[in-house]
Figure 1 (cartoon, rainbow, N blue to C red):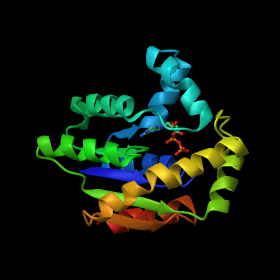
Figure 2: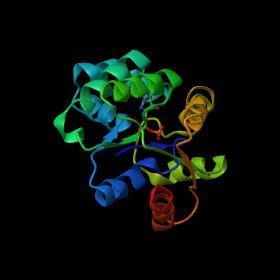
Figure 3: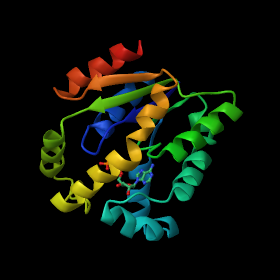
Length: 184
Ligand code: ADP
C-alpha cells in the first residue's frame, strides 16, 4: 500500500507518519528528514541543498525526483511506503505516478491534513526542534511556497478520486484515529 501524507508545514505529517508506519508496518520516506540528515552529515547532497532548506524554498524537482525514485527501488519498499513531504509539486506527482505505473503499482491513498494557518504558525514556533527554517519569516516563506507550488498537488490527486481530507486539529491520537478510519 502506498500512502501520501500531505499538508502544509506544521500540519503534523511527521507525527502521524510515525504512528502510521507502526500501524501499517510500512516504511516511512520523508524527503525533509533525508535532506536534514544529509546536511548534518555534510554529504555532497547536503551541501547542495543546505542554503535552499535554510531559505524555506523548494529543492529543485530534478534533485528530489531522482532521490525519491532511487530510494523507492530499494527492497524495503516492496510492500509499499508512507510518503511524507513528497510530492510537493505537480511535476513531482507526475513523476511518482509514472514510476508507480511502470511498476504496475499506484498511489492508494492521499491523506491531506487540514489545519488553520494561525495554528500552523503556533505549532511550528512552539515545537522547538531548533530547525533553522522555523523562524517567523521562514515559516511565512514556507507557507507561501506551499500555497503556490504545493497545493495544486491536492487538485492533481482529487482528479484521481483518492483524496481523504482529515481535520488536523485535535489530539495526536484523535487525528490518527481519523486517518486510520478514513483508510479502512
Ligand atoms: P515542513 O513540511 O515542515 O516544511 P519538511 O521536512 O517536509 O518540512 O521539508 C523541509 C524543507 O525540505 C522544505 O522547506 C524544502 O526546502 C525541502 N523539501 C522537502 N521535501 C521536498 C520536496 N518534495 N521538494 C522540494 N523540496 C523539499
